[in-house]
Image (cartoon, rainbow, N blue to C red; front, side, top):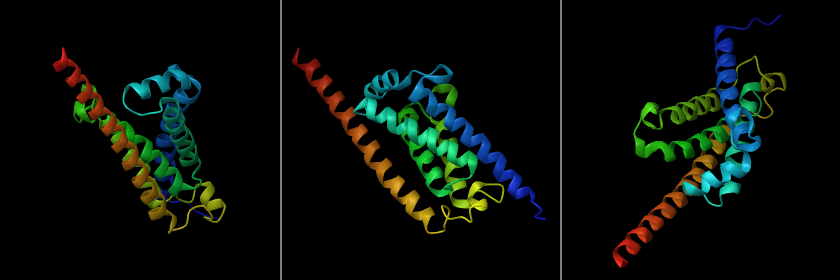
Length: 181
């Protein structure tokens, strides 16, 4: 009989909490559950904050949060799940960064915390109370961690960079229009 230690229990609790929160946020975007706005409303909002096209951005963020969160909670494909969730939360943190750190001021504190928890789980692995462990870690190999995190970092940098470029161009255009009056 296998005896689980407190590390396994701690990882299970961290996976369930982090994954559950992420999955709930993602279903707000995808389906409008839990007071969310669904794909149409979220897509319009994403477009307004510089993520274009808005609906495609809403789908990507919703899938990364819902899928990444559900897989983290299950402890399945943990490197990819953690990386996907971390990428989505890094994109959210970029939106909140101008407001500073603390969430009560609209800052990036909450998004950064979820991103770090998801990254930590991708790196440490899911523990023995997981589907990855039950399946012999076929979706949780050591080489998958740097590949998943590196790929996600590159894609997130590109997406956030394009968003920032759009916002700069929009601000410059508004400023030019103001001076043209």
